[in-house]
Length: 157
Image 1 (tube, rainbow, N blue to C red):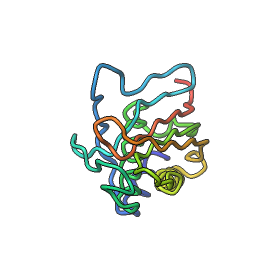
Image 2 (cartoon, helix red, strand yellow):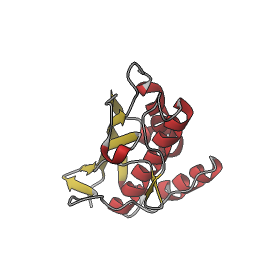
Image 3 (cartoon, helix red, strand yellow):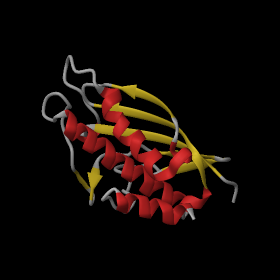
Image 4 (spheres, rainbow, N blue to C red):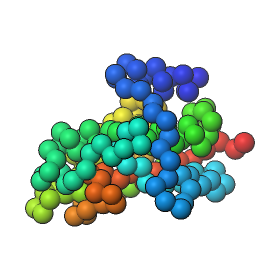
């Protein structure tokens, strides 16, 4: 039932679950170890193309940063579905490591990452609550604005 609820809740928010992005290099999109699922970093990519590049507080506004975090979170959800086949096997998100490229002197990373955290809770309910760390590097791979690394607990096969 969770699988259908995720799609419905996204539609109610005016969003759609994308196809899971393919890795940008020689690594796996996800790896399962026991009941933990480790996702490789998800970026604000849409249809295989970078959507938000640059630094928040310089080339991008905070609103654009929040949109980038939400798009990266949608890609996290898409990877979860690709890894598990459905959201039914998801117990809950465990941890999100969020990186937001910021201009010197800009320190609003937690506010930007709330966009991703809020989306997870909105569509997954309590299963979307997670521990979180926030980083504010001067740049990220491929000049992306946001990078999310998520670990999830999954039900046994």
